[in-house]
Amino acid sequence: MKKGKVWKKAAAFGLASVMAAGVLSGCGAKKEVSASTANDKEEGETNKTEEAKAETGGNEFTDYSKGFPEKVTIKIPVYDRGFEGWDPVNNYYTRWIQKEFGDKYNVTVQYVAINRQKEIADYMQMIAAGNAPDIIYHYDMPQAVNYNAEGAMQELNLEEMKYYAPDYFKKTEKTIDTYGKLDEKNTFFFAERNPIYYNWVTLIRQDWLDQVGKEKPTTREELVEAAKAWKTAGLGKLGAQIVNKSYTYEYPFIGSSPDKKDLNKYLDLNVAPLTWSVTKDYLKAMNQDFNDGILDPEFYLNADDAAWKADFVAGNVGTYSFYISANTDVINSLKANDPKAEVSVISPSAQAPKGSHPYYYKYPPYGMVMGINSKTDEKQRAAVWMFLNWMSQPKNLFFLQNGAEGINYTLDTDGIAVPVKDFKGESKLSNNNNKDYWCLVTEMTDYGNDEKNLKANTRLLAPAGYEDLVTQSYDYAKEVEQYGLISPIFTKSIESTGEYAADLTAMWQEFYVDMITCKPEELDAKYEKYSKEYLDNGYQEILDEKQKLVDSGDFIAQ
Image (tube, rainbow, N blue to C red; front, side):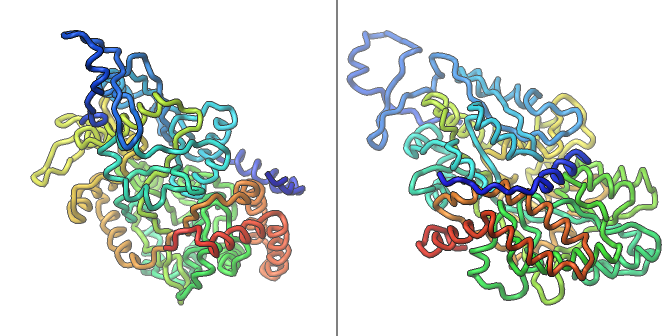
């Protein structure tokens, strides 16, 4: 292991600390018992604790379809999103899972809460302490690769997975075959993905636009002009929060004909591409907004979604980006604060300057990226596969996604679940429709076609009376559909990313905030200085290692 370069500037870590403190059907195909085992049994003898063996692909697996002879405990991660009144590890649905799956197979399903805003830190701490869940997951491949680089995951036996989770494996086999290898070892398995992009919305104060006589912006320039008009009228500013993970800030500034070599080199969810010219364009635009007085001057204190939402509800800012859901309280809270407030959705193109296509991060053809904990033993691993296979059964999955028929929902003539409005009973779903439980097997509900899915998702995503927000977002998503870009997926670990990512993240936070908030005439000099320091402290090694992997063909071109 290389010795990491230590970045000596404590200011970056101090800034990060200040910002963080400032805000806040069957489980496995049943195989016949081997002949030798059968002959050893006396006629009529039954032994429920007998571990029947089955042979598959040259491997011998134990048949647990009648349950494990001794209690097996599996630890399953679940995001804790801080929903008020929701216990992510002990609720109606975790108890239902234990009753329907766990008790049937003599398995204790123990949920482990992972803070959604601090998930990497949570996982790294648990990995270091040796008590991480049996499934280690992340939505982004690069971070999953980083977890593996910490020795957190074990090599997978796909025949074993196929034996214990045949239905689950059948649905994801092609994806696993294409994306599941790392360093030539089977490492990852995946949830299914039928992606939608209209659940991510940017709300804008429509009443403010009307007040200053502006149409909804379709380019960044139009958005800026609207914000300047707000300023003149004494209204709020453009909202934002600190960029410190999942780096996609630069996509709208990529231009109209990007160099594929640059995309392979710089697109990276784990490390900000500070030295890319596209980032400089982004910084210049944000710096201008700041100095023009149209950007929230304390955007860098918004360390999470809740802080930005609070600014929007209070009327301090006129834009707010988030994953919309029917249970969101942002609109009702806004109107409680200002009864005259009205909102609409703006197109993703409103983030892109003229001459630049509205590029966006396109999801790869898989959902959650998962690995099995290196400390998970054979029986626990079998139980995990059985659990995933059980959850993937349509009846079980539908229950987790919708609750109990006649209580949580009714079915319409198309067979689509219609949620009971304002349901507050024991079987109330979490604010994101229990997705943090069923995301292990799929990323979205699916009724078989786009029309039905839109109808269903409108009900799931739109607050009552605001269904048009989802249809607006759907139309905009269709308009920019062709501009999705998938980050390059490397099939070998990028060791330097694991070594330097944490330090570079701290540096990025200080550098980019300083460059946005400095005087315009200072920006170029600061950019050159910070870029050199960034490269010298590990980023150059990351870029060089990526280039070697590209040259050797150890990546999946998109």
